[in-house]
Image (cartoon, rainbow over all chains, first blue to last red; front, side, top):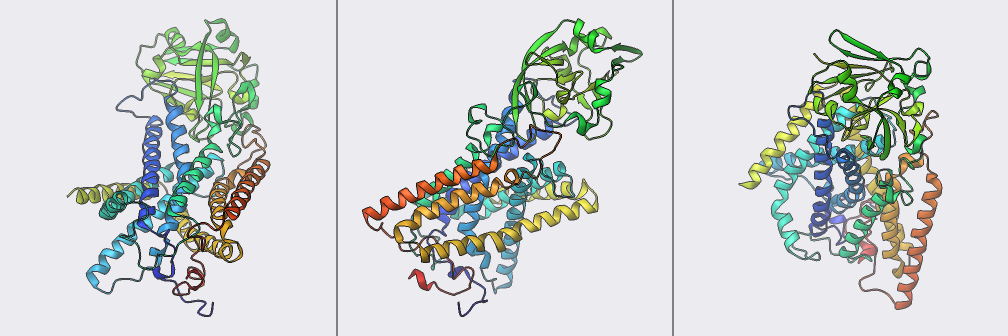
Length: 387
Length: 158
């Protein structure tokens, strides 16, 4: 260590694990993870859009549960993959700039795109993981920023693939021990072979999924030691926002509680007893949170369409669902016409045979098929049909 | 040709993302997002990777040959999974009013996993040392010395 502070160069990294043959193979699966996360993320944001030119489908009822589960699973699997991928290409971080001005310009552009790709990728995986654990140590809007950065990441990823395509092709066509595109210095045998490093990466990615996915895949519940939720909760389902956090405990348990169903000039006021006296239906529907956890329950209550018929609301109208909650981004939600008319959409009064717990939305909550959990409004106080 | 199209598509998507990023929240929000974007790269490239290189470099000096690959595998697997479990291990998002959130014994889970990985590493290493030194097992994936300390070339690897 006599030359202590001299900056390393790519030649300082001599392990033959630093090879495009390794990077391309990890990169393919990393790309698959990012593509799945991007597409499922787009689906999730569209499902939460108030305006939907193409109506979001109400079937299958478990659709959003699967897409959002996949979103978090693919993002989680990508963490070990990204770490290994960046480690294999790390020597390039220390590449000396080109002397030729035109080459330098190209190199600066490429480095800029790589810098954006790395920044955006790390950002997405870190903020996504923290969001799943409801840890928000930042001052920006998570939802908007995660969404915008996802476009930057995928854009930079496509640029990266376009730039590297010839090398990727060669690397994937040749064997894993091919050295054609390796740095001349990267020849030292390691204890770990290239195949060994790849298998290690797949194991790490698989373990990342197994130890977390139980929050949405019931079969993995016991294995998922790092799952954000065990799956326990009142009525057998976890909760996201409690009644006390929403500041509705008093109003939800007040004897003066009533539900208003409004269409134009017609307003119908119902107590919880009135709702219980109506025809009760039971539907098995999942609660699927944007944070990736989900759970299926047997919900019993009044079919929303039955209520809309009572005020003479025509079919295919948007319905605004209002809550007792006074503050917060998701205190109310808009139910598109196809969801309002679906027979499975309930104003639930019971969950798994028990009266709805206050943290699940007592006196009554909305539960609709194939709908993001944040839009399954709890502590419902108003149902207003658009005119 | 297809590469040019890809390049164009990528640039368009990236520009759209940048526009979304800048136009949908106030300056403070943008500054905070920028800080987090930059910190990720800096912490990864200038802290995490050098630490990994250092650990592997130390490992390659201290460990007997037969132990190097199993230990490297164990470090990669346990290290990456531990990193992604930091938010639940610290229970930073836990709330008094919600007993269903972060409701597992994460520390116990981690110790069981770590013990399991350690046992597998030890067993694999012992099996390997009984069979004699593996092919090409001189030095576990270590660039250290070079990567962190900045030595050109790699004396201990040769």
